[in-house]
Image 1 (cartoon, rainbow, N blue to C red):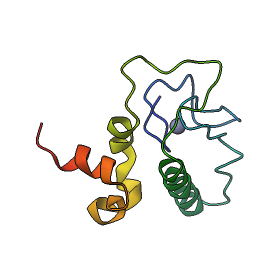
Image 2: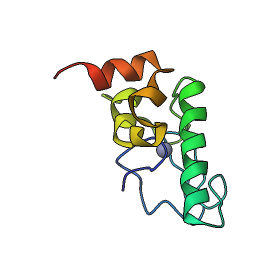
Image 3: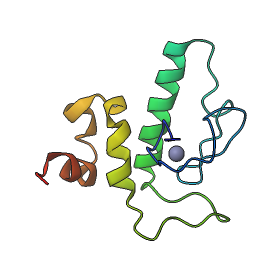
Length: 102
Ligand SMILES: [Zn+2]
């Protein structure tokens, strides 16, 4: 499963029932608690922004990050949440990953 907040693609289960993403630390069903699908998307977007704003650090002290872990590369998968190029402009590192040709 891919984390809908940070894009980590080795989530050990569905993003629900208080599962905690080892990458961004989001506790699903708590941190992203929402009444409607729209509110859920908004909350998760806010969590993505918060995580990036805090330096996109690995959260878990128990599970270690994959040795080639790159938070900016993985978050590109959910960067549509940030509102496209305009929304990610505040994150120069992320911008570099999404705009540089491979
Ligand atoms: Zn995550």
